[in-house]
Amino acid sequence: MSTDTEELEDDNAQGDATKSVRPIRALMRGLETLQELNRHNGATVTDIAKAVKLPRTTAYRVLETLCVAGYAMRDPTDDRYRLTLKVRSLSDGFDDEAWVHDIAKPLLTKLGKEVVWPLAIATLHGTSMLVRDTTDKDSPLALERYSAGFRVPVLGSSSGRVHLAFCSDEQRSTMLEILVRSDRPEDKIARDKALVNRILAEVRKNGWAMFDNPTLAELNLAVPVFARGRVLAGLVMRFIRTAMTPDQAVEKYVPFLRRTSDEIGKAFEASGSSQN
Image (cartoon, rainbow, N blue to C red; front, side, top):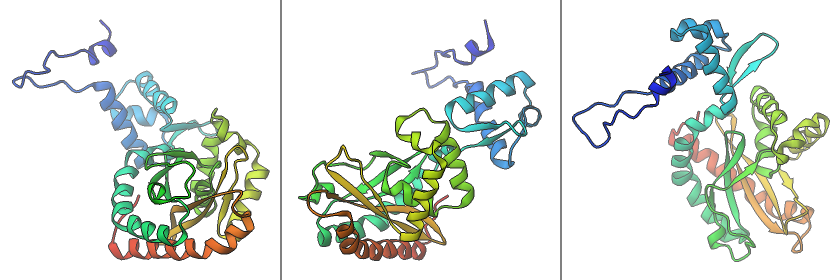
């Protein structure tokens, strides 16, 4: 019987409190490898084999499995494996849920009463933007009612574009490399580097992003939420294209969005919350 089969066998201990459950060694190896990659700016197969005490062939399989899952990537220039931004999805969720509920939600609700249009706050989660909270249920102007947990593409959303425009150069470079390799239709735009650079330069110049999907009746407008010198989230407002032009939306509502994004950022800093 193969080792892999043994690792996945049921110990028949389920329901028997007197027996201990054997850990799945393949999973343990993967977690130990993630820890090693997190400690170093790139590691070779040999490095991982020594650190995790594995045969080189097994270390290679573990690393390639992490690549297939999207948590690591092999740099062809030096054959070193490095973590991808998807690893953040293993920890970001808990932290984001806490500060969004305690800090952003009350301010989002307050702003929703002023502007009436549906609002949302979204953060980077893996290779997409995750909507953490919305005012859709309270907005009579929401054509579609989205709820927390809805995902939107990074380059195919205003929240994603403000994040990419204002995040660190290193994070932006890594994220774009991942999106270029993506086979999802919504990420195809990443392959046009000149276009992406123009889009992000315009977002940085304006301080806001507008995304218009011509197949939808709503456009979305976002401003970045900053805290401790870095972009924390995107604050988004959706509006119906027949109600006003993009220029009118920017002129009328960006000041409201910026005021609330500043309030969220300041409250985040004052609370001592952390976001990795």
